[in-house]
Length: 110
Image (tube, rainbow, N blue to C red):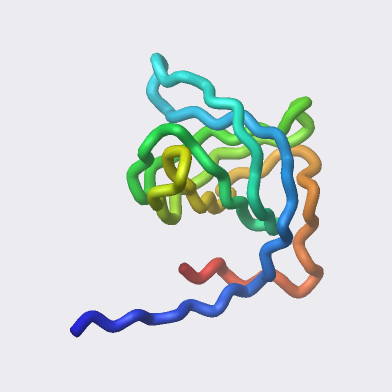
């Protein structure tokens, strides 16, 4: 029998729609325009037409372009119009829509 282990998040997700561009690291990778479903200061949940591999690195940029980062694919799950991916921000640059709490110096778990 399979067991499910719940991982407690250090930060709550906020339902928020933000226009973003996502693309893979390969030079010929297409840029996809999509919208976040929820966000935190550490990442976002984003629908995608493409299937992504867990731990794959993604280029992530908010539109009109005030925030960009490399992000790690934490999960990729089937979604009614393709897939939904959970992204963990790795190298954020610029101003994101959510700021980290002052005491959030703990490493991200799961």
